[in-house]
Amino acid sequence: MARRANDAPEKAHAFDYVDRNAKAVALLNDNIFYFGELGMQEFETAKLMTGLLEDGGFKVERGIAGFPTGFCATFGSGAPVVAIHTEYDSNPDNSQRPGVVEPESIVEGAPGHCEGHNVNGAVLIAGALAAKSAMAQFGLKGTLKVFGAPAEEQLVSRPYFVRDGWFDDVDVAMTPHIGSEFGVGYGLIQSALISAVFTFHGETAHAGVAPWKGRDALDAVILMDVGMAEYREHMMPTMQCQRVITNGGNQPNVIPKTAAVWWYFRASSAEGAMAVFERAKKIAEGAALMTNTTFDVDLQSAVWPVRGNQTLAELVQAEYERVGAPEWTRQEDDLARALQDKAKAKAEGLSRGVMKMTGPATQKSAANDAGDVSWKVPMVKIYFPANIPNISFHHWAAGVALATSIAHKGAVAGAKVLAASVIECFRNPQVVDDAKASFAKELEGTNYFSMLPPDQKPPVDLNRAMMDKFRPQMREHYLEERPKFT
Ligand SMILES: [Zn+2]
Image 1 (cartoon, rainbow, N blue to C red):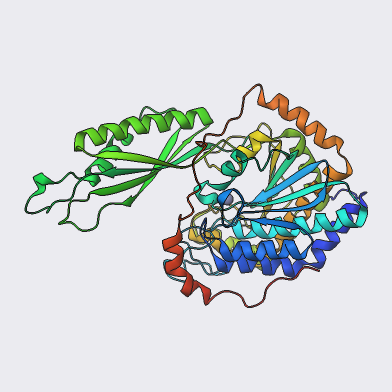
Image 2: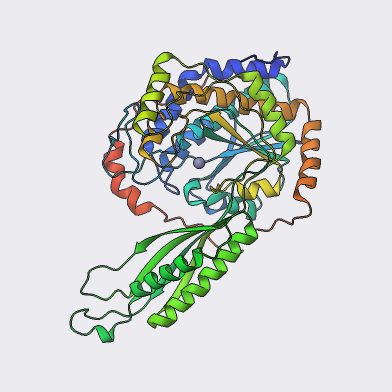
């Protein structure tokens, strides 16, 4: 990979900072991996991340927008205001021992990182500290804001941050996310999603002795499921829905008076997701009518599709080429091939080089709660190579590389690109104006509005019971050594 000449001393300074702190980057990455905290319960993770930002000279606000594990850290003053943000939550059922090429839990049944949000966290902090170091050293004007966004896996926090005004004074935003290569795009990148829990209410009765006295809430959940299954046939191809039954009653001889089903409604646009949601409410009404039950809906979150701004994508592409993709050792490549083989994926090893920018991007059915930010201000999603190609997330295999040298090298490379992209906005504020101008054209008159009701509160108890159950066992695997950036 031919690297671009580095004509910016501020960027050279940031790259030196990241290289000098490569051990801290790896330790931060691994600490978060072993915390393995689910969304809204990222207490150890947020404490470690905010502590590092504070030690590094940032002013930290914790608990923003009603999120106990969310934060906003600020350095500098005045324009332009550049925001960087990412998530650091894990997933249920995915405890996986790193470096082991077969399913092997660290703690059986426990949550674990299987999408590399631990690496996202390390990149965010290392990129922020490196950019800040260059800002201080070279007297760069502007404000850097670092947002910690809880519960991405449940698509929760950033729509609330935007609704509550945390991005009102932001000029441009960037979000790093793990991938298997350096790749950036613009246009519509991901889909919209509405997350809602439908709870049905009936009446208990002895199921064997007097079932005619009961009104079965579980029946309503099942009939809603049947209705949704029929509806799926008539959805647009750009729409999807998935669900889990979170409460199906307690024991077979008591007719459940309460039952609940948690739905994700996906579509290529916010309007589409709302249309699926409206239809689902009608189907729930039908299910309630048939079972003589009632129901309520708790809208946990609602996100717009992630979009990428072209000006910022071009800026990031230039930084990818400046930094260059990591060079992998034979052992790292062998691990990748063995895992690909085991997971029945194409065994082509690790990726090399930098992808060409894609634009307009092909929209994916996945969603990310950064979506709302990307309609509020020009935003770019920065993918960096810290995972193994052809392995899909939320699978045990996706956890294998996340606390190995593959993730460590990828985090170093990702942090350099993030820092350099931030620095470019401060060195060359024209690019910020250009991004705003191209963003205005990209929106083509679409008026962003928050899909969250104004009085909707964040679901702070989300994942608490599961995390409380597993944390004592998981704590035994926490690393003793904490990262120190110098
Ligand atoms: Zn993710």
